[in-house]
Image 1 (cartoon, one colour):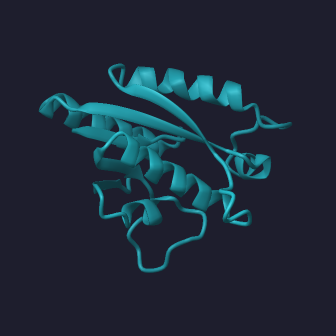
Image 2 (cartoon, one colour; image 1 turned 120 degrees about the vertical axis):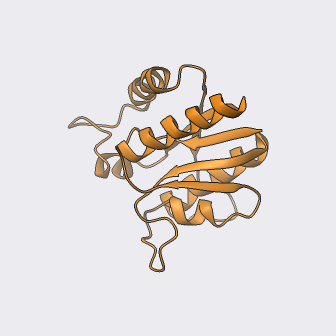
Amino acid sequence: MVLLVPFDGSALSETALERAALFGEAFSKDVVALVVIPDDETYAQERGWADGGSFDAEGFTENLRERVENIAPEATFRVEHARDPEDEPYSSVTMNIVRTVRKVAAEVDADIVFIGSENAGRVSQPLTSVGAPVSADPQYDVHIVRHAK
């Protein structure tokens, strides 16, 4: 069994990773922390991932790697880049991230995806949340973390 945690460094994703690590330890399951790097600098800046100037994807990734190692040292750290698929060149950055999370979930044969999201599962879903579309996939169970510690 594999537990997948999309990780962006937010308090909710940190809590999701902590819970996945506890679950993995209790049931001897592998945990994969997935960082998805957007292909859109504006998206990164809007989320506070860029320090003033341009988005440093490499520095951002290394920062998240260290944070994952501190929270869940046994977790596998994986990085993917979200890109527009050739057949949908005008899809949103959020949907490209969702596609990437789903693709990785299938590749690692995830049994549970731990998502840190204030919005996943609500009736009205914001266009910028990856939680709701990822949680809609029937290929895996979902543990939604709505409150950071």
